[in-house]
Length: 361
Image 1: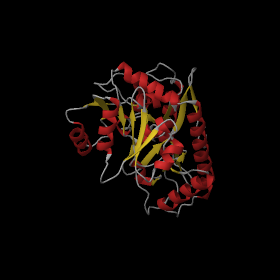
Image 2: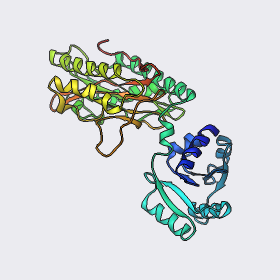
Image 3: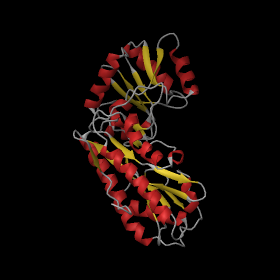
Image 4: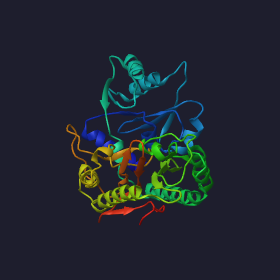
């Protein structure tokens, strides 16, 4: 954790930022190791404070030995009061805060407590830019989460029956993930049969899986806070020619994107490798979402594989990044096909981490 703090402090120094309040749960855990559900970090060049309530003070001391723990009390000594005292102790006149995670009400309370003493400076992406490249221990945990996900899918698939509902299938998958070693599921599991598969984020319901139609399954295990993410599209019984035509387009689009991944290539170029191919086969309008996203302490984090944004600088892939690659085609009234693997960017290209079986190799 100390190395992560040193890297963050270097970024802060480059921006002439003397202190940073870290509120985002994933960023808090990344920097400190603290797994509690409530708390904030105050980082300065010389000190690191973890501010939390009495439920977590003992846990914080164990999990975050590089941090001094300060207890807040509501009512009586809320976060703004603790920060005001800490600012006075350390002579702070500026405090950066994570603009994407501090609410208007929280900002108002901070501004009132620090008025005339400390200037609040909104910042974005300071910790997130550290998290996009995974360290060796993070990769080991991600590989474990991915292996549990692969095994749960492979074990459950032969047990699925046409008369089962989407909800029943989702529960079977969740049980398999838990038995396999997951501490939790990464996100609510998607099982979308037939026409429901045209909804990329469908909610499992009473629809039977059926025979001869596409079933989109999106699932993942969470291990030690890190998330896996896997999508497979399957058919119970015999698939028709239309299914295989669409399935093979999606599979080839994914193959082209992964083959083009390497350090230095921009994420929007990788997206285009899949998107342009799907478009050339007549289904460009049926692939609306981005090609992929980073995974780690959040199931959706940087970098994003998506179209170029007009007001944002391009993002280049770096060794150590882990992203999903998940092209899809969605047809109203028929269903959808999505295939998703997690991919590690290496110094030479990319390595597919997901190993769950596909309908075609």
